[in-house]
Length: 310
Image (tube, rainbow, N blue to C red; front, side, top):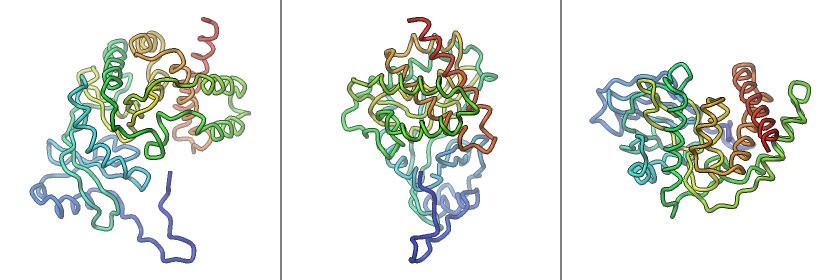
């Protein structure tokens, strides 16, 4: 990811990024879409990592990329979400308008139709097996959408859907850094297995960030899927990581049985989940260590179980 710096050495300093807050969003909306200038703007409970989300009136959201790394997602979502939506069994965001840089904010931004629901969590889901089945069905339908002309996996989506070896060095460095805190031999085995399970298929659409915060639940059931900023066409194995970050036991088994991927994709999915948990643990200040440690334990256990079942 690219952090905002103070300018090239020896050159003029770049203007500081303004705080992405309600006053900034109010100025952006009023300046470019005056028909909505009088609508209330409020923060949302889970504002997001890649973009910061605000509610605009009752029926819209404003999403503002945090930094340069996420700006390409704006054009991508406006281009492809209207094409994907008719083929999917659950609502996804509907782009309404694109905003341009202004008020000291240097990137494009978006207004979308509001989708009701709360981020998925065990306590909000009435039946994890049904949730897993519904999610797998959504991902299956996404994979069936015609990929012609779709954006290939790459730097724009942090290489989700690309070969895992792009993160080989980073993963092994994290294992070494954590060798006194984790089972480094088991983690290395999971990673080596994932790298060996090479993808041979044709590119398909995938979401790229199937995480609890991007799955909206209403009345205990999966109601919508949001944030397609890391979507692309390529290897869909990265979309299996929810199996270890949220699901477990029977619900994980249901998800795997329903999802249209093979055992090699499952192994690569463990690799994706392992990579993210390791780099989080290695670089975390304590805020996310518990969750990352839980995911790591689930991945190692699932891999060990798969070996016993061979």
